Length: 337
Image (cartoon, rainbow, N blue to C red; front, side):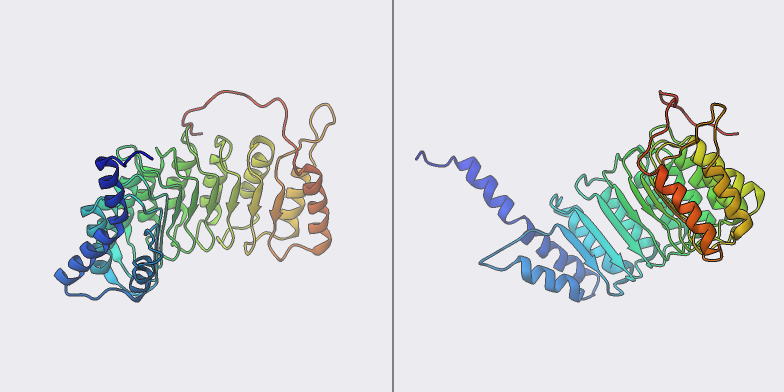
């Protein structure tokens, strides 16, 4: 067997020590800020630095209240060592606030390996959303495909800031914004995001916001143009069976050929609204053929009678798996009506 080249050996040695370098840099940053290492990271590094079975840090999970200094210490260490093995970052109830988000974004602006970012219940305001919107815009070409910001009360202002980047993002696939205080004004940011010609979003979870009639109509209107979304959750968004809402739903059923799952639970739709939805799903065209939509799952509010709900589910079952014919081909740009 030929001897290994010196360069190959050095490269392998560097790779083997990369996580150790990160650990040392992280400890140094913590000491500079006079804070201790979170228990979750202590346990993780203890596992990774095992002499018999060493490993690499591919996922960060923090559930302690580390604050913005704790997030900054880790982000600065990752940036200083140019760590390229990380794939996912999860901060749950970590209270990192906007300054912590700023530090993470500074690292992620130069990182092309992290594809999942979860900052849930972390006290993020519209300013933090501005940092995230900047990161997700075309300037940095972020590889992030999953973004979860649940339980951060940044409201309409935060959604608008976030959309400044999302409205030109081609990579993000899953967006979760549950209980973020988003109302009708923030729905405009969602609209701009969904109508982008190269939008790649397939899943959006908006449970527990306050879109109300006007906001949900704006989101549904975007689905007349959007060609990527397959799942939309509108649970508990304080809208009802206003004719403009049910009309928009009907338009989605007849014009959108990608949406497979729609959840409307815990909203003010009763039997009158459900009958309109049923008729829209069962509507026929000029030739007498049913205008089949691609929807395979539709959950209605609990106030809809069981009998009517069952009738609707029967129609959905017939539609499931079918594709509409005669759809227009080609890309569309942004379009408002």
